[in-house]
Length: 131
Image (cartoon, rainbow, N blue to C red; front, top):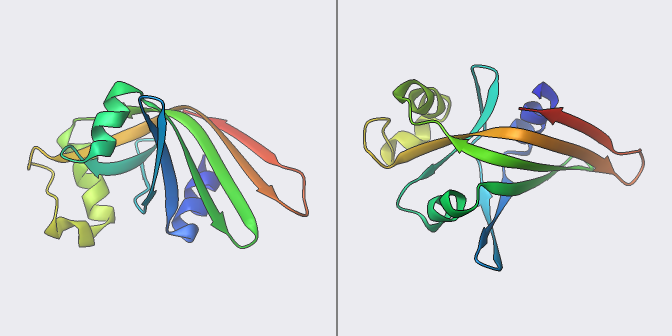
């Protein structure tokens, strides 16, 4: 899991894919945090992505960095605890202009039953399971 976290931190931007009915939806994300041994992402409850995850928590994310790409297939589980939200916002203080752990909008999810694959054009894929 640590390798996945480090890859996403280094990449800075990854793309999260959800489903809206039968329509795939993909958008850039930049938050990744390790908290209590789990990997977390963050969004706002007011956004369509929040409703899409609520309807179908199975997602994929993808990032490219240094000639390698990472794909993670997982289920996202909401963690509504203030401590989890605060840990995320403390890791990304620039988000505090839009979010607060007590605002009723900030939402964090951890990755469950995750399968990550790191690939490149020059080496065999590496699979990592966690959560």
